[in-house]
Length: 135
Image 1 (tube, rainbow, N blue to C red):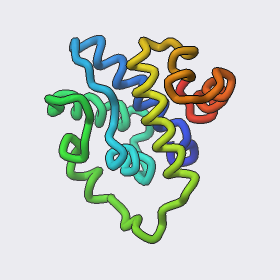
Image 2 (image 1 turned 135 degrees about the vertical axis):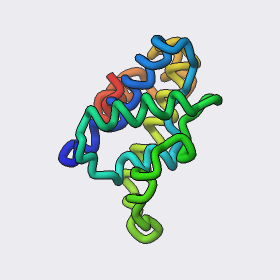
Image 3 (image 1 turned 90 degrees about the vertical axis):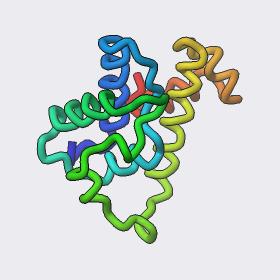
Image 4 (image 1 turned 90 degrees about the horizontal axis):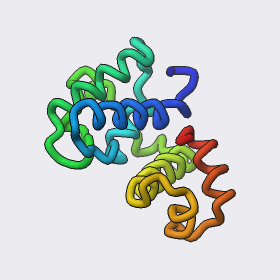
């Protein structure tokens, strides 16, 4: 994951969807802060560590979104000072991932309705979903 940061949102969403099915919950996803932390972390345990962090967060999460308070201290202690290091492309990708995921959920996965809600063409939505790892 350290070398494929762009896969983190997609993998996290897959683990969240699976845990929603297994635990009969309806967690929407990660907050922007939590996703930013996931993107900044090196993931020495790779995908299995990411999966374990999501599973742990599910146990603690009683609302719709996984926040920093649901994440282990070891992960939060690695939080970098990003005030001066924010990269506009990373921020845009995080925001787009969150918006598209939420809109897809509201529209029961219907891409045409999701594109219409977001005010973009369906092929633009598909291209963005592919780029962000949401397919």
